[in-house]
Amino acid sequence: MKTAVNIYDAKAHFSDLIATVERSGSCMVICRHGKPVADLTPHRVHKQGPLTSDPALAGARFRGDPCSPLTPEDWPEALR
Image 1 (cartoon, rainbow, N blue to C red):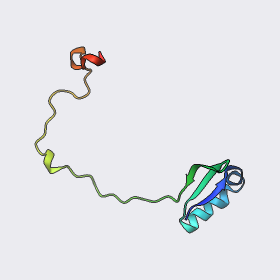
Image 2 (cartoon, rainbow, N blue to C red; image 1 turned 120 degrees about the vertical axis):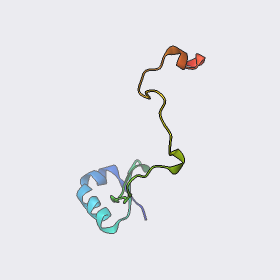
Image 3 (cartoon, rainbow, N blue to C red; image 1 turned 135 degrees about the vertical axis):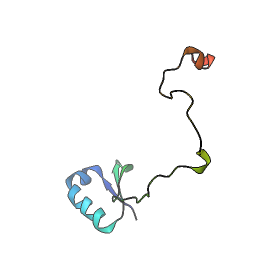
Image 4 (cartoon, helix red, strand yellow; image 1 turned 90 degrees about the horizontal axis):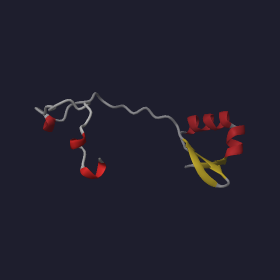
């Protein structure tokens, strides 16, 4: 459940808000004049395995240098 806190209170009690979010794992919404402007959420570590290549791209090769500048002829007429 999200709890709404105005900016003045968030500034005055920031350490307490951090402790509450850390302890409960819930989010807090920081509001200005009753309108949400920011979320205070607990940090979550995303466990992602190592990157693997897509088998559909096996054998794909770059033709040319992808970092080389484009010539005017390479650009569409409308963007020259």
